[in-house]
Amino acid sequence: MSIGGFMRRLGVSIYPEKSSVAEILDYLEAASKIGAKRIFSCLLSVPKDPKQIKADFLDIHRAAHKLGYEIVLDVNPQVFKDLGISYKDLSFFHEIEADGIRLDQGFGGAVESAMTYNQYGLQIELNLSNATHMLDTVMDFMPDCYHLLACHNFYPHKYSGLTLDFLERCSLKAKAYGLRTAAFISCANGFGPWPTTEGLPTLEMHRNWPIDVQLKHFVALNYIDDIIISNCFPTKDELAALANVNLQIVNFKVSAACELPEIAKNIVFKEKHMKRGDIPEHMIRSSVGRIKYGEAEIPLFNAPETLKRGDVVLESSLYQTYRGEVQIVLKDMPNSGCSNVVGHISDEEMQIVDGLKPWQRFSFNL
Image (cartoon, rainbow, N blue to C red; front, side, top):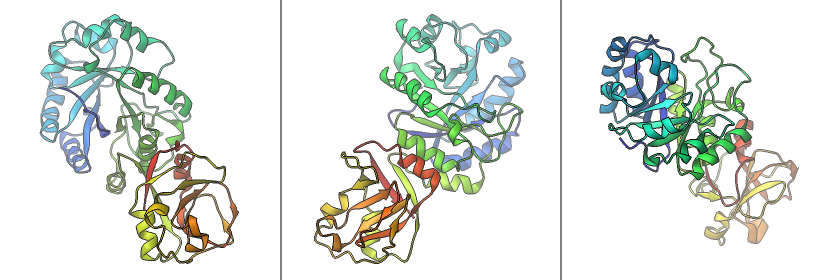
């Protein structure tokens, strides 16, 4: 089965050895309602009895497929050995109705390439969180790239997650080969495949962030295709927060500073904005409102003396040709007296703002 197409997707993780079938199916049902389409499941931590694995996994996989999910199982060479599986015969994974396998550890390059040509159409997913040339080696052996994916690790141990720079270097290498990429976000309280429960993010900076902000960050980075909740189970509030995240362009949550006039709501919250290509030190600028509302009357309704980092600013008609321009303040600065503060973006989301690229699109919501 072809995984993902060309759209960014939300995914979930399940651990049948730690949850009842009923709990898992309830979770998959709830997550499917907010658009989740991919499942990560782990064979590294389950009992190594093939019959028991088939009994535990098959019913779940069949139910998941009915909900539109695609399923990738985490394995390594030791799992192959324990289950008596040869890389030349992947029928076991086909029989439990998986759509792919993730190789937490590699086989050397040639084997991974050979597996992409398996007769069942199973996707082969490489571990992307490493500083070796493994990906290049696999590509040297001419794999079927339509059946090759790349997925980062998650990290249960506090302070062991990836740096943003390392994530970017590894991910962009995979994207340069045209591969679909995946990474993990973590709910606040949940379990994974291992005893340590200090969160399960890919990025260390995400460990204590709200789950929806983690998702927004990966959307903004624009090189991660499948964004997977790593631990079980997110709360109803966390699922609701994820449902409000736009997977196409990053949307920033704004806490309104006051009662806003209708024109401010229309300009700030109904338009899609774009960071200008000329980059000042103190603000991110969007000129979209200037173009559409250049002749409109935009009143001065909230003009504090100081514009503070995280403030979302709308220029009033007093600023003449700048009327309708929307800005996100990066550094505190005095207000000329013509600028309205519409609201404020949280410190966590401002770390996403800091990484916006020139001409990158974004939006706001209350």
